Structure formats: structure tokens, C-alpha cells
Length: 112
Length: 420
Ligand SMILES: Cc1cc2nc3c(=O)[nH]c(=O)nc-3n(C[C@H](O)[C@H](O)[C@H](O)COP(=O)(O)OP(=O)(O)OC[C@H]3O[C@@H](n4cnc5c(N)ncnc54)[C@H](O)[C@@H]3O)c2cc1C
Ligand code: FES
Image (tube, rainbow over all chains, first blue to last red; front, side):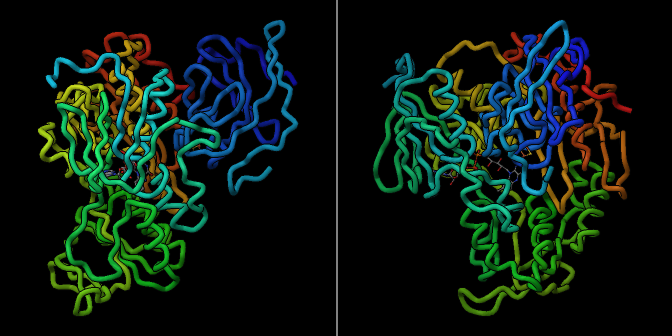
């Protein structure tokens, strides 16, 4: 799935893509890497695209859980469950994402 | 042992207080490559757990204790845990921690992370609660049955959260605040009105500018609470009373140590106390704040979790590139509304409502010194708060010492979304 041109997301920024369900967040890090994970925090309903990115980690804008952008694993509480990481390829200046086929870990109260 | 002969490098660390800041300290030590001995002394029997849900999901019954543990699933800090053990005193010269049961732990460095205790009064009747620990929350929850009359003394964050959660459980709730609208003293009238509105629409009764003179109970020790009396003489009946009247740093055990204490353990801007090799982090500590020019105790979750990484780098004398501290951040979830604060309020800021209204419960308020935004409060505005937080990263006032090598990290960045 083509997301957008790499140039459309500035370094340090993220894009929330809600044309898929659940929505995903695509990050362009300061180091120039691109990652895609589920956008919804596994703790409660917050958009990780609004979070703070540091290195390969995003911090949830609500209660500050940290997730590894490469794996979706929880690096710091209060979230317990990982979120899905999707496969990203950048080709000819465009970002493509292959969605994970795993079941998403949506927070309580959020459904597809 | 003279202070100049501090062991170098540090081979053993004792962490006193096994909660958010203590756990984050142990994690930071391991993340920084420390392979020496870590001993963690914790006054509670529990493994480190998360406190914010105690007044929210856990009190509501939608989260259980196993949701609260702070340790990761496969986390192994290779630490010697001494849980259910209160530290009774500390000898800074030898860095020996004396436990209440008579045992001692001696190490090259000590981390103080004993947090806060809820303020309370002696000799209260049964049915009067404070809320700080998991056991407090379990005890309180058992009493919050539908129709129960709860009086919450104090309209700060914890009082308001307990009120909202209890109301959601069908409890009849009255909050007694000493100020105008809740939180208005800290954040101004717009936020106060919005918070009052959120609570009242949820069915919580809020009474401002009150002063409780006495908590009333049936005679005899262990008699049950019957209500509270205001200084006006008015009596408000209650089956359960929660005191949400603030907290004090848990530094009682340090009183004879000679370590400098103020509102909390007085620390440098990297968390070192007045005694070499002894650091303090979390709610119990008052780090030097270069912007304020004073020591300042912060009782926010995110500061308690994030500062240990800075302190542990200093403890291990690792000259890590100093990261500028992010603006302090606090959230509160009440009656389905998300209240978020970031920044630093010194008093005297101008207050601008940048989005939403108090009645709509969707305020975004920005506080400025001169033209410089220094703090933000959002009510149900997570996107705007996230954007503003990033803009607050660089306080206008030059920050000496720790920020010296952090100029690039503290460069102001444009918000991710445009702000009307
Ligand atoms: C009900 C509640 C709700 C909260 N909600 C929010 C929120 O929504 N947002 C937010 O930002 N913050 C919130 N907070 C604040 C946040 O939880 C604290 O900032 C955080 O817990 C501080 O962590 P700490 O490790 O410094 O101290 P604490 O969590 O207080 O832990 C200190 C530990 O040290 C132990 N101890 C004390 N004395 C001794 C001794 N002498 N020897 C051994 N052990 C000792 C204590 O038993 C305790 O286990 C809330 C706090 C409470 C109580
Ligand atoms: S919603 Fe992400 S940590 Fe709570």
C-alpha cells in the first residue's frame, strides 16, 4: 500500500493514516528512518502519531508509555501489550507499507 | 571513611523506595550498562506498581492489580529485592541504609525514591480514607457501594478523580474545596470553571470556599464516621470520607542523616543530594530548577519516571550528552474528560484561551511570560496539547549547566499541527 511521498513527512514528524482500520501511524525519524505501527495506543485511546519520537521510540502523548518503532514492543509502562509493527519499504521516494496480519491490540473500549 | 574516598567506579547501588522512580532508576542503571549489585528496598509488600489508576480504572473496578505492575513481562533487573522492608535511617558517610527490622545494606551509592505519603490527621473514625497505595485503593473501593454518601475533602487532582470515579459507581458525592472553582488557584478561572462543569454534569456536587473544621464519628475508638463539620457550623452527613488534602515527601527516615531536606530531599539539577554518592528522584525530591532559580518538588508521574535516567548517568559519572529536561507533564482523567498540563507556572503569567470553551469542556489554555508560551492546559484537547508541549521544550530563560550541551535538543520546533 502506497502511503505518500517520503518528502511529505518531514523528519521528526508522523502521519496518521486512517484509511485503514485500525489506523496506522507512519514515522519519519530525525535519523531519516521510516517506521509504521498501529496508531492507537494499547493502553487507552490515544493517537501515537501525536507522540514524542526519540531515536527508535515513540512516547504516547497521554500517559507516556514508550513503544519501539521497529517492533511495536512496550519499552516503558503503563501500557502492557505491544502494538503491531508494519513492514515499510521506501522506493523511488515513496513510502509503502505492508500491514501486519497479526491481530491488533486495541485498548479497552476501542473496536475496529 | 572520608567523603573524598568515594568508591570509583561505583560497584553497588541501594535504591530505597520500590515504586515508579525506584524502578525507573534500576532500569536506567542497567540500560546504562551497570553490572554491579542493585539492592531495592521497598516499604510495601508489592512489586512496583502504577499509582494513577488507583483513583481511576482500578477504583472503578475496570482494572485489576495485575494491570498495574510496572515491570515488563520478561524484565529481569538482576536486583536483590527487599520488599516489605522500611528504611529507618541512612548513614551518608558509609552509605549504609538501616532497615526497620535491624538489617543493614551498605553500598557505594544510594538512590532515595521514597515518594510521598498522603496527608492525614491522627485518630480518625473508621470510614475515613486517604489514597496513596494499592491497599488504600482496595480498602476504599470496598466502601463505594451505590447510594453511599461520600464526602471528599479537597478539590485537587486526587480528590476530583476519586469523586468522578465514585459517582460513576453510583455513589452520592460531595466535594469540599477550600478555594474557588477546583484547580482554579493553580490554573486560573477558565480551567476551574471547565473542571467544575465536567464534575457537575457527571452528578458530583462541588462546594467551593469551604473549610472543614472537624470529621465527626460515633463515639469510641473505631467508631464509624458520620460526617464533617464546616467552620460555619454546618454539618454534612457522610458514610465515607476521603481526605484529598495533599501529600508530604516521605523523608521522615532521613531526618537524622544530615542530608539537606526542604519540601523534599534537596538536590542538584541532576538529582545529587548534599551528600556525595547519594541521589534522590521522584516525588520525594526537590531538584534545582535553573529556570526558577530554586529547588522545586514535582509530584508528577512523568517527571518521576524520566528524571532517574539523568540522575543515574550522573551517579555512574557517565558524561552522557546532557538532554534538556522536557517540560513537566501531568494528566488527570475525570468523568471521561482528559485534563493535561505541561510546562512551568511561576505565577503572574498571562492566560489565553486558545481554543474551546469552559462550558464545552474542551478548553486549550496557554500561559505566557511576555510573548513566550511557558505552559499549557488542555481539557479534551490531546492533539493541541501534544503540539504545544513540543513548543514548550525550550524555556526562554537561558538554562545553565545541564543544558550546556543540549542546545540542539532544545531548539524550538514548530508544532506538528497548526494552531489557530
Ligand atoms: C491515587 C493517585 C493518582 C495519581 N494520578 C496521577 C496522574 O493521573 N497523573 C500524574 O502525573 N501523576 C499522578 N499521580 C502521582 C504519581 O503516581 C506519582 O508522581 C508517582 O507515583 C511518584 O513516584 P515515586 O516512585 O517517586 O513515589 P511513590 O510512587 O510514592 O513510591 C514511593 C515508595 O517508597 C516507599 N517508601 C516510603 N518510605 C519508605 C521507607 N522509609 N523505606 C522503604 N520504602 C519506603 C513507599 O511505600 C512507596 O512504595 C497519582 C498519585 C496517586 C497516589
Ligand atoms: S493511552 Fe497511551 S499510555 Fe495511556
